[in-house]
Image (tube, rainbow, N blue to C red; front, side, top):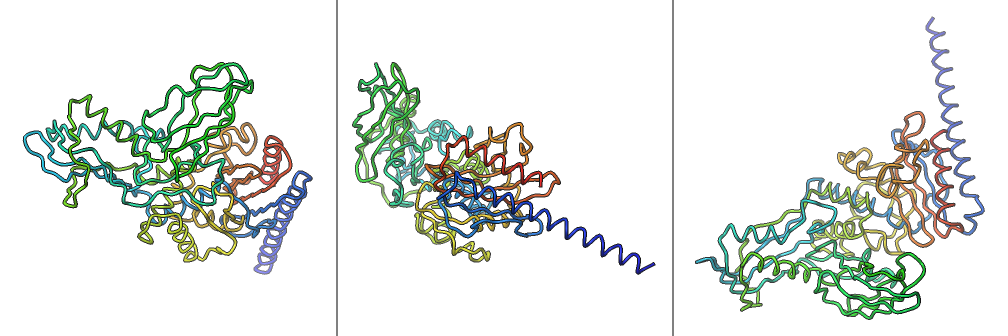
Amino acid sequence: MNKVLLLFAFIVWGFSCTSQKTTTNKIQQFVNGFAADSYFTGAGIGIIIKDVEKGETLAQHNSKMALTPASSQKLITTATALELLGSDYRFKTIIETDGGIENETLSGNLIIRGSGDPTLESKYFDSQQNIVGRIVSELKKRNIKLIKGDVLVDDSYFKSSIPRTWIWEDIGNYYGAVPNPINYRDNMYTLHFKSGKAGNKTSIWKTEPKNTGLQFDNQVVSSEINRDLAYIFGGNTSNLRRIEGSIPQNRNDFRVKGAFLHPDLALIEDLHAELKRNQIQVLNHSKTKKDNRYSLFGISSPKLKDIVYWTNMKSVNLFADQLLFEVGQKQNTKASWHSGIEAINDFWKLKSADTKYQRLFDGSGLSHFNAISADFFSQILMSMYHSKNSEVFLSSLPVAGKSGTLKYFGRGSRIESNWIAKTGSMTGVRTYCGYLKNSQKETYIVCILINNYNCSSKKLNNKLLHFLINIFNS
């Protein structure tokens, strides 16, 4: 009887192994077929598919080839921030003074000391709206009606800079906003245009806020093309911004968003207006910050897990790059591009991830010089799936047909709700890295990086969708 049971167990085991091998072979065939498509002739493609529970590689194609990841790079930044800082970590902005309070008078300056909170007045957080109102409310609690000094900022936490590997077309536009010690309004300003007949020059009739600290050379013309084709050019060595391209014709208020050079100017402008509305006078008698300061109160950011959610769900470059800076500060006592990148590399080396096939130049993926392999992404995703921060991390990823950058991808198909991933897109680059739950409820890690494809975005989306459905059904 024991021999019969043993024989039966051996047969079942053999069938299981054969079934697994068949599935693996089928998935590899799908990968091979996808990579061999004529649209990818001359393209760089890296693909890897892993069983997340068993850790087995089911299929791959050039999985160690370092390719431009675009915004999928945010997976690495957010994963590292969660692991090193913790999901409940908060940024803090401190409101200080270098004078005393007596007889309803603040004798010194009111100083806002920044530490890189990216959420102040951010459109992604209701709790961070009306920051100036909260500051004034705290002053009124202390019965302050007169500030003898000035309203100043302390931006000594780090020096803001633009990565040297970002391209000219991106710098100056809203998605090219860089980390600052004091971030405000997502570090974006708005230009309000008036346009006339196609071919004629446009005019800028208003900026929000009024004080952007910038000068504008407007070369934008009106166009019959009904979309925003205006680009803002300028770096951090000058406050001049040149705007080129076109906007739709015959518009009274067409809005174009740009990246602040000094977002603290907008905060100061708004705060002065709020102080005036509440009849708190500022005499502007002193602009020198003294060393003997003390804290009046602080403003905390939402928890890191909430910042990570929007970073991945809406692919917010500023949030990702600010997280990179904060990781650098906490690990290497310096908030900078280099320090943050060094902290990321050191952390994943300690986690035994193979970092040989990746190069980082920022935290958001905006640099075209970033180069990461599908295999490295899979190691990050595998680690985070089994991390204590797994639920927070996975819930930040867009869901096919439901949310974020995947809201319309796969809607009505078999992968709807079963594919969660971070996407990346820039000229000639498309990447998808995430988790696919197949028809048998098994979870696969799927990482696809494509550089220099030769088809339209619509056709590429259709091919990616068909490929993922095949994997789902396998």
